Amino acid sequence: MPKVAVYNIEGKQVGDIELRDEVFGVEFNHAAVHQVVKAQLANKRQGTKMTLTRSEVSGGGRKPWRQKGTGHARQGSTRAPQWYKGGVTFAHRPRDFRVAVPKKLKRLAMQCALSSKVQENQIFVLDQLEFDAPKTKEMVKLINNLNIDKKALVVMPESNLNVELSASNLQKVKFSLVNTLNVLDILNYDNFIITKEAVELVQEVYA
Image (cartoon, rainbow, N blue to C red; front, side):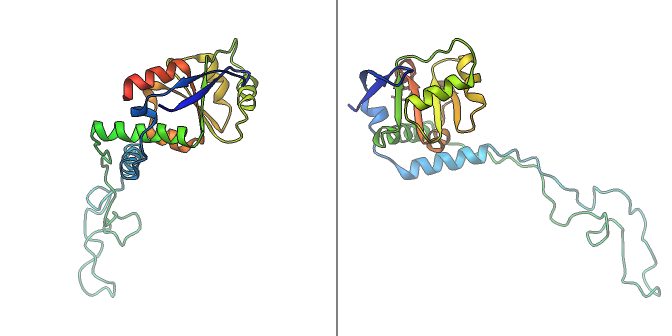
């Protein structure tokens, strides 16, 4: 079982914790992680893009001029694609980009992402995380105490408004709950800050 240090909000080590191998000690599976991340990015797409075809634009009820004798090219409608304000030939239509991913594959990808943070020494377990008031400087102080100079993902077991608001103004810090944790966020943020209570919950959910 991998063992990592447990810190307090002052950045001092106050103990250690053993992590379960089936969640934090998994060999990285590139294929599984790639498939889940690709699906997650696809599912974020709205798919509401739409342009009008020649049957949907306004106007063009009659033939603009007679077929022959005008010197112009023959035209059947002012709604044709070559006309100004005409329809689009291959118009974009609303579509659903959602991709289904098996639950076992999602779990494997999450285990790989969590394990990568342990293997790269980018996980910071806190004994507890609580602020008296929502202050950005308190979150900055925590980040500095842990000697973190890159992006960080802060994970807690349940909503904490003071902590969430304290992180909201920091561009390189994101707050997340265990039930909203996802592979893309774990990989996008270099450092993984999680409370001891959240670790236990993560191990229950993804074991």
